View 1 (cartoon, rainbow, N blue to C red):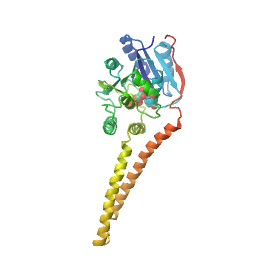
View 2 (view 1 turned 45 degrees about the vertical axis):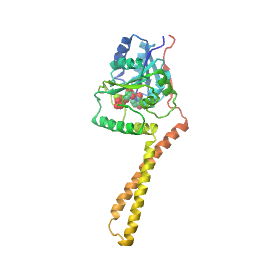
View 3 (view 1 turned 135 degrees about the vertical axis):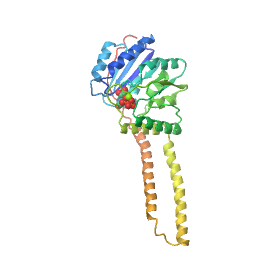
View 4 (view 1 turned 30 degrees about the vertical axis):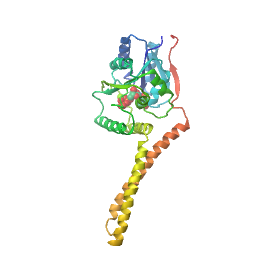
Length: 313
Ligand code: UDP
Ligand code: MG
């Protein structure tokens, strides 16, 4: 029987979380009384995750499918790969570390059944470090201003999508992307509900500061041209202001005489402008980099093996 719900879980070194997650997840999904599948993507784990996923598949071969990546391609690619395989009408994404309680899934599904095609979660009481929470708040604000995307909590990965949204994401072909934002831009009727959030059950966050910065650059440059346009405007304003300054200095020289002091002020202004110029170049570089990744046309991820039993259709 074709599953009604597909639950997608990206896994990167989650050996201590997989069993407890599986127990809670299957309990919730069994309670739905509809056929379901759980699609794990093993994103190049180097701990015992692979072994555990194989065991889970062996236990419930019809419900559990495992996509084995050939390396670490990142959480969003892991989810997109699973999107290529899912068969359910409603697709739910979930982290493997039990930060998103599986018990919230029925509420997400109910919202989908009401007719919404993208149901986002926003975390009621987010259990992450002070730095993460506040950095996210800031990024959420910037994103809300520079993109058309209206979301309360872009970082929350506990979400549900209707089938056609997932198919569109899977075929979108983008190299580095941000799934909640992409889904939102494809949605006709998005909504959001409050979900719980727990501290990571075991192991450590897989995102280092650098990864977080990268991810957010991808978000900004992948969904908006505003960073580039801001620099055009900034260049325009700075040229105007420095034009006025030059004029002022020239007039001063003619009518007041040569300037003796103020060299360091000028250096200050110079360094500031040089810094600004480099930053602007960097932003152009981000877009050039994206174009480069797209035209290179390398596979976004490499699947080594898929564990599944589909002979029940
Ligand atoms: N993850 C992944 N590949 C990666 C990094 C993370 O598949 O390269 C998975 C990870 O196993 C987890 C989810 O993505 O299921 C979220 O990761 P994490 O909990 O480390 O992120 P955080 O909650 O700190 O944002
Ligand atoms: Mg987490």
